[in-house]
Length: 201
Length: 438
Image (cartoon, rainbow over all chains, first blue to last red; front, side):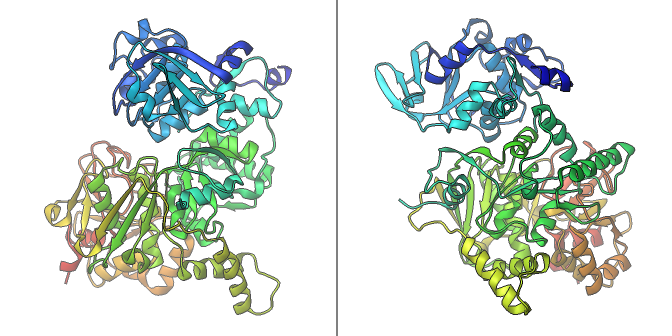
């Protein structure tokens, strides 16, 4: 912490993540399903017109999925899970399409597939993204969903759907709250706050 | 079940015996590339809280995106890059004028078959021409690589593109790429490793092979791959020996030792590897193609757009700024003049290309035809400087992107084509077929 203060000049948003939340993320997620279709792009996840004007986490969260499902931003609860079809997050590289969901408290996105940059942004910004087409086929909006990260399995409507494991590093990044925070932690530089970077290509 | 190239290359980079598509691994890149963006990445790196990079020997830094610097701001950025390079002890640093990163690293034989190169540049897919795994990453990710020497990567699914037959007269690898992108769309290869196979690929000269993985960035690909052969091994062996000579007295045996090491590193997919899809094209049927404004997948046959008025013709970039590209253009313009009202801008991809073109007489031929030369680098490709089009103008370019505003002017139109088409269009003042130039 002292070291961080000495250096100063931090870029990006500070987000507090408690140890209990990290523990929860490491083992099990329990929430409700919000189900969407194929090809959902970053413009409907977080409209481009807000990218330079809306900067606070709460404000960003308030526009999540605005042009896809207007009731989502008010009705979604922390711990809920988005379940979607193919190519979730295609289009712009804007990181707010990830952070809007993260700030909303969405625990994970389960999809048939993710757009390449969205997937990397998701992990690097600390949002859990899981590819599991079978679970997507089975899920309906409002279903209870459980994601077991110890066993790499999704439990849904009484059935289990396995998914390929994330590497320890990818999980570590998600748990730490993002790539920069993860590296600081790994190198013994982390303080009590987690820094989520605001920059991206 | 066999493995694809991507599975083999990333297993090697992650130190694992095997991996499968979809798996996420921690991979150690053999080369980490950055360019003018080295200074902003260094700021993110310092924000991590570190002073010294973990992998100075694996880093390559080129100044190429705004060279020579057009403004004091750009010049200051270069000052910061040089200071960082010196402070970190980075040996593989290439100054203003040496050339475009992907051309320079190829010429310097800094990337070898089967290696993993990650670059803070979307066209890092380029290195597939020599059988390496090249992928673009973001700035934060590059800072993370400098800090830890590794980055998490998802093993991509693979697409197999088999090209049979042989490209016709005047038809180039650029036309092949535009054909593929036009057919399957700009996201046709999304997140995938695109493997190219077949006789039409194996018989391509090296400068043509370089075009293909470079263009695959416009196909949504994570990386692309061409099977490396003798021609690739020889190219790299000689350059590697010139760069870092072995302690062997005679040149031939030194080069063959280098070649043996390089060849040993090459990776090839198994015959029973699993592909997400396979596409087979007959090269004989591929026409000359143009990507029309404002997307790379807005591809039409040249014959449909021939006659469209252009004001600027740009020959250069990491896609098509090589010696053979200048040779093709010189052949077209020999003894002719660039049309009135049209500019032909030539920017060699590297100092080596420039010098070789000078020795071969191509520079003189092009200058005599009225061409204008720029410093080796990216030039106006992304609209920084040195040949930005004006409002309402049309530019035909050998580059890889034609997005609205890409060259700095949203009210300009950009057409993408092969070097010979660009040269023919400069001579005619309209988009023209080089095979019809007398």
